[in-house]
Image (cartoon, rainbow, N blue to C red):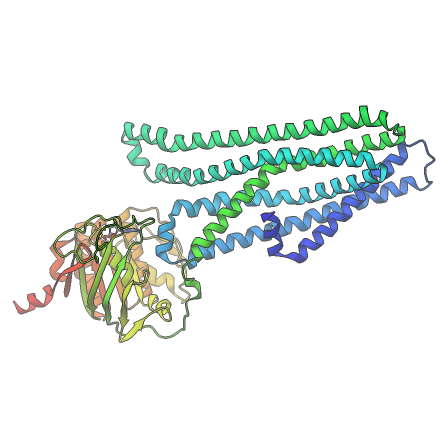
Length: 571
Ligand SMILES: Nc1ncnc2c1ncn2[C@@H]1O[C@H](COP(=O)(O)OP(=O)(O)OP(=O)(O)O)[C@@H](O)[C@H]1O
């Protein structure tokens, strides 16, 4: 039912056309049955019997093909819209929401659910023709004999009730199986991303395979077998009731009511004619059930993605980028939301206010990591290093600085302009960032200026990677490179962007010492000389003196701000 509603929401006009074609097909099928019956009946046949048969046959074929073609178009349109909606949902959801959902769930929906749904939707055309034929046969049966019709309908209703009883359980199993598919996908992700770790440790590999991957796959197999078997039993039970109904009509009703031979012949003809669409319909039910489960999952995912602000709707006005970017963080704080924070312990006075943790790690009270409140200023033509221990909040701060996270309190101010929902999209266009989990696109998307290949070639030389990679029509020859080389390509993209604010999250960590020197002493200095606001997250204490400002984070708080370059000048 949900599936039909979904298709109607895509285009009700097409649904009307499809139903009309389906009805014509069903009616023509029924008329064909009437013709066949009169051929086998002893009564004289009309002279144009063959013509009627041929014309009806053509109508059955034409309307059947038309309704199928219309439905296939509609189904594909629906699937396209679904894919488009889901992808735009991903693009427009806030980063923190996507991080909470997890990539494995997103991928499961984008692939598995869309596949199940498309399978269900493509089954609908033949189901439509089957259902109209079934209805037509029943109408004909009613015309042939009232009592036989009544008993057949009663028998069919009992069969449907029986099948439905089983289907409730089957539906529940499909739901549970779908949840397991998320877990299985996470294991697939782990087996591909963690293949090196698994190959190097037999015990871990065996444990992972047995307990995680094969464990979940086994449960899924059991669930699908249980659902399939239950459905087969339901189908068998339905067929048994149909047979019992037939036996009742053939052996009891026919004799008791002295039903004429001709009526019985018509009855047998109709039941034989009915069996094909009935069987087709039954076989499609599991696809429909799985499609229904997938649709719910897709809607749930869409809802989770759209429950926050839609970043696609953020206002954006084309205006020049900031000239020289003075960026201020005023009282900025951020905290990760945990899924189910434990309730505060009951007691006198209740939970106290959460304070900062200047002296040590915060107590693990189950709530997420909290950063700030932070007050910092990043000047143009200045290099700021952000340093601190693992988990001190450097990358979280980077996402706040780049406008990817929205501060819980406080605000970002760029050149005296407060950044909020109305200008954050513009603000993001002022920042070039390379995060530790950066992604490299093979072609230079979004650069529509001419001569981009020459610019890329220039930077390939400058970043000492021209011997490995070439560029043609904005496309790189390869990105199958070492991590350090890939980072140089990411830096190349950042330099091409030529934005005002540059942020590098542990960029130099994978570079050889010689090129590390080039990065700190040449590339960063060059950016500073060009008036850029440069922010570098680093653990390289050898180069701390390259920083104009050095910010030290501890447990989400600014522990210290020093000015190494200035003190060097003074010395
Ligand atoms: N997506 C997330 N959801 C929930 N908590 C997170 C998330 N990302 C990070 N955290 C938490 O925030 C804290 C700070 O993480 P962050 O990545 O900012 O640290 P970092 O200083 O960059 O560490 P490192 O030097 O190891 O890269 C961590 O303790 C981590 O548990």
